[in-house]
Length: 476
Image (tube, rainbow, N blue to C red; front, side):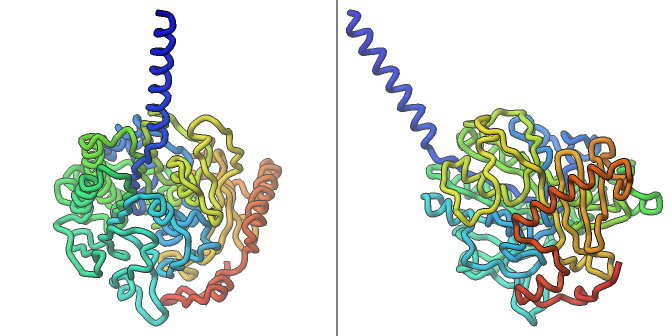
């Protein structure tokens, strides 16, 4: 009898071990939601009690929230190119919008595809660029050729549009179609259909929304109505003379956010309905933030928190603890290796970012000094004549330090001074801290081979042409 008992116990043990091994070997799905220009500060769970984001607030409790997620070059093209290559902008060459990412770059979808995944992309792309002599608007309205889709097969994409209520896309055959109504809602419906059709095999789906990027006043009316009578609270770093325009912009900005929050709710509900929740990596993030009059500044590219700090929420019930927070600094080149690591897939040697898988699983304690932030070439909304400047900087868990071509520019204690109202550069009391951050920054630049040159040098090195009057250099 004892013999049979041990035999049954052994069978049960082996069965359990086999089941666990199969669970570990099962390939996770990936649903990556990328918004445009959504700053980290404007979500309910992050402390903004006016913006209405119940679905994302709920998602944060089921996920790991990255408290210090940073967009290294906080503008569309550079961030997106770093996302799919795992490389820094001066390596992949997209440090200026509307320039073409090289087709031969080894990108995230190609790795998933090589390992048996279906791959899909819906929404804004903005790394195809255009040839010299073609206007920005003309270049953005062309289809992306098949050999420049970087491994994505399912394809409903527009290079770049913010006409959310009259939005078009091109399919796999470069045929133009129009999204019905507000494009993010239609794109969400399409993403749900994609997941339904691929539920039986592993897939990676990128869903790239245009909002809450301006124009701020173009969300569906029911969302605008939620904020039309609200007395908007402003961040203390918005000057009084900008208060009214900032409040009006925020009403529209928040309306877009609440519309997207409903889209997130639909995606989460569909994943659960399909029985995919446990084994799906779900990411919600943004390519960069938006100043919205903080420090009397607009849009992005700048080194302040409203521009560089982005939301990053990662849900993976099979492996990650719900409601956890990651305080270590994490930035765009780290996304590709981390997703591949969590998926048990090989990370290409070309990747320059760090794999945070061990950190997230609790098997490793990464030593992260901070994130490299930069503007190699100021352009468009922040070109030279609009006050743009080249800079390099470091964002740590507690501080931001940046220098321009003339020397130290900004130093903030983000813990004691979260709205960055007190620039400590040149303050003798903080000289040792400034020197320490300068040394850490220089170490990062040396590791990247970055000599911190004028923008024109990088434009020349990559044989890029300037758009409009961006090349007009103003001395600071």
